[in-house]
Structures are given as structure tokens and as C-alpha cells.
Amino acid sequence: MVWGGNDGAVDRWVKQLEENDPKLVSLHILSFRRISTAELGRIFRAISANTTLRDLYVSGHALDATCMDQLSESLTLNDTLSTLNLGNTSFGLDTDVFGLFCEGLAANEGLRKLDLENKGLKRATIHLLAEALAKNKHLEELNVSRNELDNEAMEILAPSLTGLKKVNLAINNIGAAGAEIIAKQVLAPLSQVQELELSDNPLLDGASVLAAALKNNHHLRVLKMVDVVSNEQDLTSLPPPALGGSMEGGKLEDEEEQKKKKNADQTRTLHGNALAESIGQALDINTTLTHLWLDNNAIESSSLNHLVANLAKSGLLELKLRQNRLDDEAALALASAIGGLQHLELGENGISAKGFGALLDTQLDYLGLFSNTVSGFGSDPSALPELLSSKIRRLDIGCNGIIHQDVEAIVHILLNKGVPELSLLEMGGNVEDKEIEKWEATMERLSSGRDKLEVIWKRKPSQMDDSRPPPPPMM
Image (cartoon, one colour):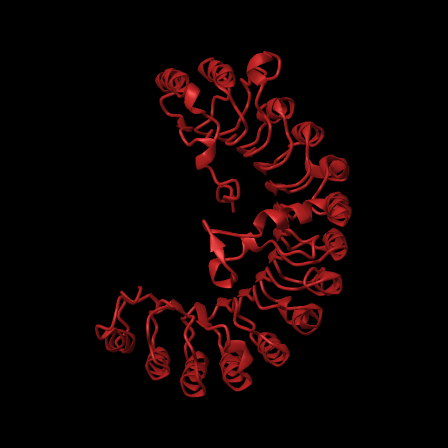
């Protein structure tokens, strides 16, 4: 439920909570709506005996000691509320208010998900949170992203994270020393953490140390390490509330300069290659990791040797290597060792038609090659095989400079039973005005022959946003 205005909503919610209205299972009060701490206190108090509400979202609203005392007491009594997101960016700066919350959290037995993203946590409140987490044996998921957590914060917090299943530490300031602490604590053999998000932290050489810990870990299923080998944070990855400075056309003015600076930083490649090599070596032993995100780490093709060698015997189902420095060498190597991998994201690299043809002739379910250089296969009949045994169902080759001659080649293959299971073909950002009529005629032929195939192609290069996220990952 979302608050729609000053229409007696608080009175209605309190009544519903007190009467255990089965319709009120989720309450979401948007941050831009006005609600006093006294009104929040009434809602918190009504939760104490409620048994129907499952999700409470009051993020972005100020909290004081009085209303927090009500919530703290309710958390000790209520064991059916499972998801909680609360407080504004100064929540973690007030030790008294945050301390009251932690008292309730420590005693609570119902919460499974706690979202404390961008709450201004400081050392004192991190201590309080760690103590509460150590006592709470029921919480499963914690989000503390965007809190400027550093190495010292990890030293305090990491030991209390080992009993959780999902931990989000993204967009903080965790460095190499913090990465080592996480490796020893959160990735320890006895840790129960199954999903770990560390993207947008300057882990640098600590990234490879952390990856090496996977050799002895048998619980982690999902590891997200996007952009972890640079001191320069990619501001375009931040959610809008965290962005500062002037904006033009929806993008930061210095975005291009930032990209150029990062691309010129050779230490990123050094650390990125070390990360890839370390994870590849760990996969010789680790068979529990299923989802791995390594986007934007300046990884080169030569560093994938261990990963390729161990890919088939690993448990990996999803591998994301978007926006690295990979070429056909990497594409051919990966294509030869797919194993059980189902989802491969290689967008924004340097893969050409040769690598495209090899990857297309595999058992993958999804192949992402957005913004590479796969065009030109139309002039070389040998570039694409018949693809009769390809298992790919979803293919993204948007923004690749594909011309009509290429389209004719791939349509010929598709109409001759190539890529037989393909259900979604994304080709946006390729067609130019001068060829649009030819494309339309060819696509009509394809539609007639493969009527169950969805093709997205009409967006022109100028209409495409090359920073757009790839399709939702498989989970």
C-alpha cells in the first residue's frame, strides 16, 4: 500500500493494524509524503499485537526517540513482520534513536529482511548494529549499502554477518584491508552467507584476496563484484538520491571524463586480471557458486585461462563480464567450455563476428553482446555456422553496427531452423534511416517464418542508451 495523501490515512492504517485486517500485508509510506514522528509512533505501537502485516517501508522519514521507543517495544512483541526499511539519511547519526532500534532488533524473532541503505551509519551506531545482529538469530538479509562503510567499519561489523544469508555492502568505501576482513569472516568455511554484494567499493588488490577465499567456502551462491578495482567511483551507478552536482540530459556533466580517466588507469587492469585469475583458480575446488558478476573491472582475455579451464566442472549458471577488455580470444575460449552455464553477459567489450558465431553455437540460454563489434558476418558466410543445435532462447546484439547484409544472413539462418529455441532477439540501436525499408521487409519475412520469435529492432543508434542495464539476471 502506498500513501496517497492527507486523507485520514494514518487513522485508517492504525485501525487496520489493530483489527488485524488481512488486506493490510504491506505498508509503504513514500518518503516525499508528510508524516509526523507522532503519527509514526501510533503506527509502530499498533504493530505490537498485529499478526497480518508482513512488510513495512518508512524509509526517508525522520525518527525520534519517542516513536522509536514504540517501534523497539513492538519489535520485541511482534514476530510476523518480516521486512523492514526505515529512517532517513541521518538515522545512523543519532546514537540514542538508533540504539533504541537495536534493542528491539536484538530481541526480535520475526524479521527476515532489514534495509538500512543510506542511513548515515557511523562508528558508534555500527557497534550497536553489530551487537544487535550477534543476538538476533532470525534475520536473514541485511542491506547496508551507501553508508560510507570503510575498513574499520568492516572490522566491527563483519563478525556479526556470518549468520545471515544475504548481505549487501555495495557503494561503500571498503578497501583492500576491509576485503581481507570480509574474506576471513564473511567467506569463512562456517559462514552461512549465500549472497554477497560488494560492487562499487575500492577493493583493489583485496578483490583477488577475497576471491581466493572461495576455495574453502561451500555456502556462497551469489557474488557480485562490479567495479571493485578502482578508486574512482562510477557515479552513474548510483541511485538518484545519492547523486550530487548538476545534471544535464539525465547524466553527470563529467561522466565522459570520468570514463576516460578510468580507462587510462592501468592499475585497474592489474587488479582486474588478478581478480579473474583468483576466481578461476578457486573454481577448481568451489562447486557451490552459481552466480558471478565481474562487470567493469578492466579484465583482459588472457586472465580468463583458469576460469575457462574450470568452468565446465564449476556450478556457475550465470556469469557477467560486461564492460571489460575482452575480445574474440575470450569469446572463443568461453564458447569451448560453457558446461552448465546458462546466462552469459559480455556487453560493452570488443568481441567481433568470429567470437559471436562461436558463442551463438552453444548450450547457453541467454547471450548478451550489447555494444560489441559483431557486425560484418553478412559478408562472410563462414562467420556463422548453421546453428541447428544452438540452445539460445534470448539474444542481445543491440548497438553493434549491424547492417542489412548482416540481418539477411542471420534471418537466413533462422528461417532454416537455426537457433531453433530462440524466442527473443534484441537488435535495437543498429538500423540507420537509409536501410530501414530493407530491414522492414526482411523482418516481415522473419515474422512470417518464425511467428513465435519476438524481435526488437526499430530503435536507432541515437535512441539507445549504452549505459542501460542488461536484462534481469537469472536467480
